[in-house]
Length: 287
Image (cartoon, rainbow, N blue to C red; front, side, top):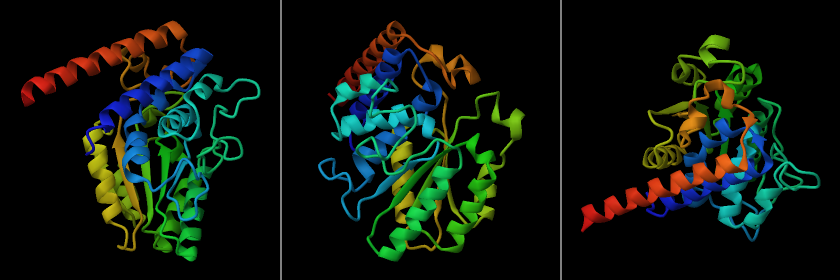
């Protein structure tokens, strides 16, 4: 794992908090749970060029759980697709950063998403198109665990396996919570790994999807699977609201909730102080 990933991960988490805090409300829980994944994809795994957002043959990331858009925007800004100052226009009038991802408005967004299940189908279509084109792209896509209750997810999953789209790498943000309650109480999707295996997918189950090194290793394993004839599902066991104890404690209530600028400032301060302590400790051990 690239050592600089830790700094990028911190910056993306803090910028996500700053954007939502400036707006005063947002899908904070499901944004914070996927920061590690976005860090690995945008700063380690993906073949992309901020100077050429539509570069032919580029890898693509389609965020099917479109309400994680603010986190994707923070990753794109840190990667250089647009100035960080734009993050403070999140979901405001005339913005190019709407609450859910929009490919017609935001540099670096490859598919407009929001209606759950549809982004995943689009990712499967993109993978099929890439295979027919022979452009060598890897297609990455992220779905939610609540989203996995959609029948469209499983129709697309069956099709992807049937067409041997082994350059398609999907991720499930398995934080066990959705807007109404726990996933288990609303409509349980367990055993999730067994379901994807039954649909003909290669499955990688990551015990801690908020562990940066574990996510990086899982993405490496998934990329090594290209050529096998099977698409890969990486199940990320995450914590909704990860990194901000007060948000984590809200449970399902943090799906979309008020979050003030003062709360964002305090959370960012705590995160940066914890990061500095960790880095100081690591330096001491290495010395």
